[in-house]
Length: 207
Image 1 (cartoon, rainbow, N blue to C red):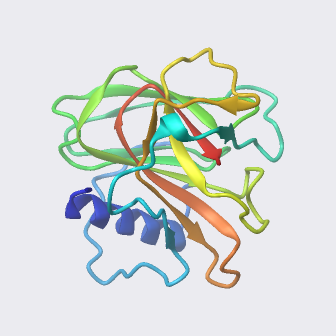
Image 2 (image 1 turned 120 degrees about the vertical axis):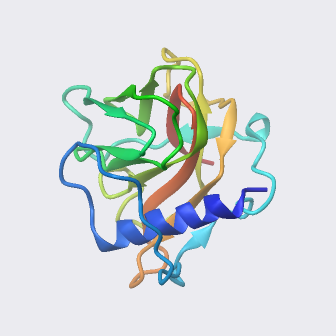
């Protein structure tokens, strides 16, 4: 079961998503507490969020694709230190939020997006964090944005950087996640938020 601090981090990021979106890549200070924030009634939590996460071995996943495939791979880098911070790719709608204490010493973070699918290579590969990192993927640039959600979304960990994401993809882990829906149209998904505890390759997938 996730710690209450992780749940709190989820709500902070969701609140930040609903209030504003990042417009450039960079570092910010650690996220400040938002005691007044309450999750919107339209937020539909993954049914396993407060318990055991779905078993990747029993899922046939399909990688979510970009609505408009990228002409080139998007790559960003920045340094995160013990005070925390964020790194974003505005072109793809991804933001990673590192809480204070996630790393002990400054580390150079690099994220590379896939050109066809909602997937990212995160480096240095093998890096493990002392506190949970929160990933927020806006869904407007993806093939599941602006349409009623038909299948559950999953945040999947895949170790092989060269794995072909076409067709059915087997993941090593399914990460704790939640889907944020439009407050005006409850079936329209707007973002997926999930926990990252170590770096390698991640994809957004549907069952």
